[in-house]
Image 1 (cartoon, rainbow, N blue to C red):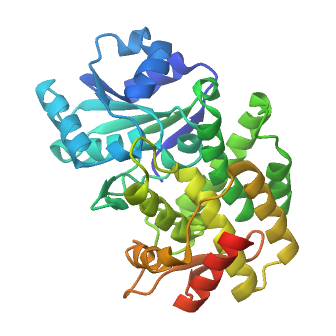
Image 2 (tube, rainbow, N blue to C red):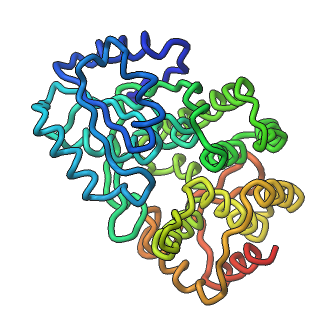
Amino acid sequence: MNQRVIISQNLETELAIALSECEHDSIFVLTDEVTHALCLPLVKDFFCLKGAPVITIGSTDVHKDLQSLTHVWQALDEGGADRHSCLVNLGGGMVTGLGGFAASTFKRGIDFINIPTTLLSMVDASVGGKTGINFNGLKNEVGVFNDSRYVILDTHFLRTLDDQNMRSGYAEMLKHGLISDEKTWAELLRFDLGHPDLPRLQTLVAKSVQVKERVVKLDPHEKGLRKALNYGHTFGHAFESFSLKHHHEGEAPILHGYAVAYGLICELYLSVVKAGFPSDQMRQTVSFIRDNYGRFDITCDDYDELIALMRHDKKNTSGIINFTLLDAIGDVLINQTATDEEIRETLDFFREG
């Protein structure tokens, strides 16, 4: 893992140092419509960004697509970017993922720096080198592994977040707790998401990032151990892709973290059934998720489509659906499988349990 993660104390100073170490001859800033309005004003007067063109794309995961990617490439080209340019991605996971992919492919690769502005991107999307876009209705179907030079985490941006986006990011932190240790897991279940204590949250964010960094450093290209980070994501990505396809006009699809939270319910149940995970800890976690994330409505008529979506998951080999499960908190089992009948039983629990 070549990127450096900084828990910011002074964003302007730390960004200036990071940019100086990138040896750039031009800087571009990427935002989406939301971060352009809420977050860009917090950094636009930084001396190190003086004169930097701002590229803006549509917000939400609906715009994490080839059209937005092409728009970024076009803006870089028209702005005179070359191999010595640097792209600063200011936004949530959609911006850091798409921006990272744009930078990784433009001129065969330019430097980029991630400044995540959502809790989800701070603890997950901006750390670890995964970049990409959605394609043909599938999450992150096209992309590359490539580290940003720096990730600068400034929790002041969390003050710009709405309640749903705060909860969305916290789901990834809960996943990190489950694959880490009982103390961290219990601490996360005690946190009041309805009235978040931001100084306390900053401490939890730092711990969460450390969990991901440890795993990614040992397995940067997801050949083995890094699959621990996929806990909750086999079902979660299926729910997310299902929502992208079926959400009602005028409504946004479910946020990634909500999909992961629902995926955790399913994969905790599967862990109990197939790996002997303690049912009391499963129920405590499921109760926390139900209380804080509500429900995602599916019917038994949706099962075939959800299973088909799981078969498209990048983690699979030879068409066999791949799961990460737990036999205890912090004890991860990768490359696990389940029959269609077991998946249907799990979806029954998700709907009714």
